[in-house]
Image (tube, rainbow over the protein chains, first blue to last red):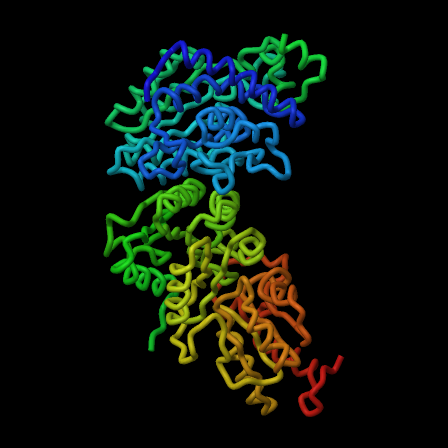
Length: 272
Length: 311
């Protein structure tokens, strides 16, 4: 894996457009979360993880689980770009005759290491994989949403991973500060963030924690490599991101675009 | 001849299978000394993973192991496994067709002192209504060993439900189902612990009315074996299902999904049964599964001399 900042920056910009195009073509979707996770995901795939597009089940590949499965259009765009399958499939995302399911399906899509869609399960699956792979030069990466970390199962997993000191497991949290509705519209007195003090929470469970700008490719790259090298247990990389990153329309309305539709006019204006 | 808790039969036999099958690992939710997994922990400590009181994590973990080529066996009480971790079983295991084996001990409505929270009387309903899942319900230590062997050979999800009460060795031919007795046209179809009750009904019928009621013991209950349906259609006029499960959503319901020619009556737990604490015999005496109740019902329903159902 070689990391080229200029290349990744251009790739990300290009794939942002692909995400918006694919979602709009197929009737709308999770714009916000797909755009917030893209930069960290593309840095992982193109800059750090060992992957084999020509052999999706290569035994020595890094395992990548997008536990926040609703953002999978971002993952699909990256996988297509890497050659796991043809780009033309993206226009059929979530359609009846497509192998691109609305949420990742490992039995249908090349390059998906585990299915997801019911939040909170991916980290546990990652623990199983990491334990199974403990003597191999393979790293398991689980990408979660911050809202997803409200699920109790996540903390069952965080506790157990700490107990077993799984240094070949890294959780990456797309901390975009929103969920679907949550408390964003609440008046004073109630914290709005999906997981307030998220870094402290992971750290208090014994994890190695880094909190970074989730849109700075250099920093993401460094953090991912540091996580891979950390030998004393699991690492959580809290990536502070912007929901809907890259488009003012989405960034300004994270609730509408958690899962929403664009009008034709909005789509045209976005692309100009 | 043995009389033992089937959870122990399961754990012991699995640990034997592990001698020659390096893919098997066991995950436990902090109940190993009650659910049979302890035998694996004692023999193969490095293939036994304590997951703590975290069933959801444990089940999804097992799925992760399964896709990496292991055959994970997940142990807990049936209630906590099936109910607490149901979404994980549905999504991580069943929908993915992950090769995970689920062991639910303490299944059924006889919970001893434990009481209602520890009962599992609709686990068959829940596990039979998700994709790719097989269900086994043994009635003896030998049945259990057969079922464990079958589950391990099968590439895909499977669930075995084991009662809390000890069960005795049987002398019947092992397999997915079998006649415990000779074939009769009025027969009890039963599974698991309810075989004990079926035997009592059969004996009562013999003593009181000098009539033979045969018993079919069903170990592989989902999918229902096709040849069992054929046997019932060819040879049985009247089936009485007795099961340690909700009567509306268990083995009887599964049988009824098929084109059955015979009449069926069913005995089990009613939906509002809440498995209060109590001794097996006390609970049995006061429940719908009381053998005398069942015997009386059958006698009123079927005119044996004329071979027809009274109403």
